[in-house]
Length: 86
Image (tube, rainbow, N blue to C red; front, side, top):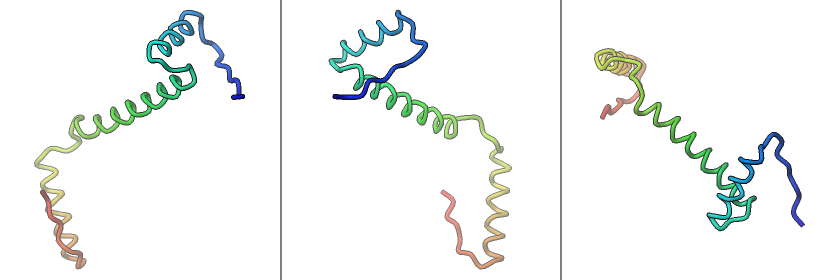
């Protein structure tokens, strides 16, 4: 038999909603809870990368171009191979 777990602080309305959502998805409550955790983690990771990739720029395009030039110069000064930028 599986182990019984408890969640403290869940009000009756939320618990009834949770049971209803599990039944609507034809899952037992344990499987549905696992799906909720997985969905939350994926959504959180997606938001993290969306903020990084589509968020406010930290450098202007002009500053970024200056940094690219400096990096290229530094790499050539120390014998590193060239970097292909875009």
